[in-house]
Image 1 (tube, rainbow over the protein chains, first blue to last red):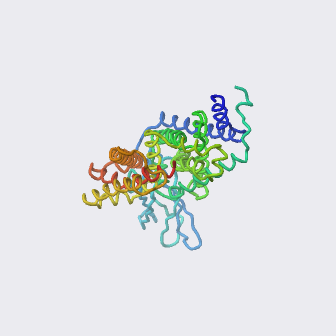
Image 2 (spheres, one colour; image 1 turned 90 degrees about the vertical axis):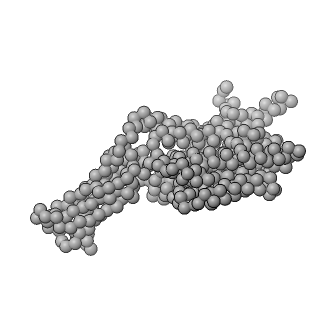
Image 3 (cartoon, rainbow over the protein chains, first blue to last red; image 1 turned 135 degrees about the vertical axis):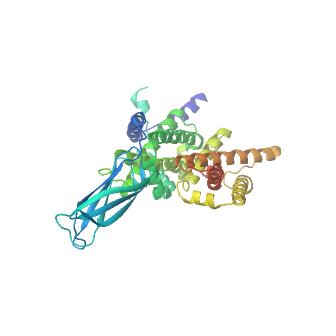
Length: 137
Length: 288
């Protein structure tokens, strides 16, 4: 009787090569992720978001005075509702202002966007980028 | 133990069918979450400690579910452990594949931590779905073929009190988890008056009682005889408490309890508790 029970138990516990293969791959994946997380836990420093923006001229057919902007977050946590402001300077004088709202800027991330200004770009133009505000999620 | 003992002669076709059921279950139970933007946001906002805790809790839940509601009676703890690892692995792969297809992750452009966060967070629901799918989506014929005896299966699927708590936990997480990350929970909580919150609490308890004792729902209680009232009260209380604990834990994870007053936090837990309690009562019976 006991032998029958053991035999039934063994039958239910049987695994074929495919199941062992998937188990091994899964184990590697889970252990890899656990290892990565443990490493992150040890090295994690919950610093504030450190957000900044850059703009480079990127004209298009319909928007000749368009700038491609990138918003970076080099801080330790995500920044939410990042408001970036871009001021166009012509001959050293502030001429026009554009804004870009980024919903989320995760840590170690870069978000892309575009801002446009009126008129045509001139060689002497420059754009100053500044982060106006953001909040923690 | 030699290799031939380890590698049995279980047909590969059966395994493939089982994986297909698991993947179907994983997608079925987790698609709402995979399409929820608050889940993607939470993926990159979560700290490594939170993510690590999440992996551990998910694995423990899978162990509990596979132990108390698994498909094959007589299965050993070794198999339960192995199956749970497999389900987590499959959950991670499905989560990655779906998020990649939906363009929610771009491994070449995003920080690794962001990709991992999003994939891990979505993988919880998928893994539990895979586990449930593997156990529940088979036909009676397949189950009988696998187990050899329906009575054995039913006997094995009669979990004790602790088993029911584990299943209630899984059910509450599965149902409540679909809504917990959304803004709607906090909106309902802050806009509700105390009367509404009380009504929600009473409705949750009433639903649990109806589902478990008066609806002839699949797997509902029919025994307990003369101690009926005692079991009704105990079962309802435990079920509702599990639902509230799960609700509070999920809300805490998504940061919905930080920076709010006690009353707002309490209201949020009760609001989510309506769904979680249904998961803890009806859900636990369905996924058995």
